[in-house]
Length: 444
Image (cartoon, rainbow, N blue to C red):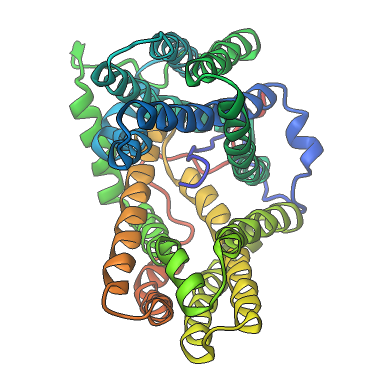
């Protein structure tokens, strides 16, 4: 899920809290002591990740002069989610989550330091990068699951919005900072800075997080369970729970079509709208900006119950402007007026895409506490996959059709494709997984 999935529950013996009569405030979220290091270290690590991606891409290109190897280097960091996300995420349910966070940060600090050693052979460099990337699924699963231990339901929703916004800002800062640093420093020095971000994060988390036991002891019938069995149990939980199936189906299908147009941004803006590379960047920034603003407003102004009622309308709002933008491009042809209108439509689609926040909260409220990490791994692994598939399909269609026509098809087919998962989502509202808690978590 966007920003991570986690579940909430009431302390043992406590009454289920009444739904909040007003949304939580940003101040109430930051007043929770453990949220601050979770939020800040996430931003710090995100900035460090972008530093490493740019530095390694430049380093590999300097050594090989191969655009393909540079692209492969950039893409390696996403592979672990696709190849082993559900499996690696079980670690967040088998061990104390604060230990998983600290251990993976320490491991990444050491591994990135090794990558910064001058003269490291290219195969070893790529292998180290892959191992570093393997730390992401357990870290993100543990972080998102731990969020529910320190935040109640509506505070979690606001925290999710803040995390999404922070992630967008951190990526922009990371890329901009990386470009500036690589211009004046050696890539190996930039990698050392990345290693330092992980070291600082590990120390911060070690000093500020409460020590909690593992949600499950990793044993059953007197013997240890395998991670394969844990991963399978997580998948089976989702498969047998209509509510979880509906939420994941809607998330994957909606994301597939909402983000597909990004893959053909350059030909759409340059060929169909007659603009330049600067306008391509603005086009790509319009949707995330809408998501950021829409998420902040949705989380801060409305309660979770009202957010959930808005999900169908918001899903439509995230796709209908995509269809309209494609039609404007295909019919209006090149011109600044058409470009500005398309930009506005993409921004509005981003506002609608804030539906991911109430869906994320609904997801975590349905998952039993001991399954949070595994459920998150399944959801995020699928998101990575569908985003890649959507971009690939849009690119393939654009080989034979005008980009504007492809965007219109993406929006139109997307509106039809989300009907079934939306109906399932509405039909299963109020359902929980077997053994799942029904209240919000206690605040530490």
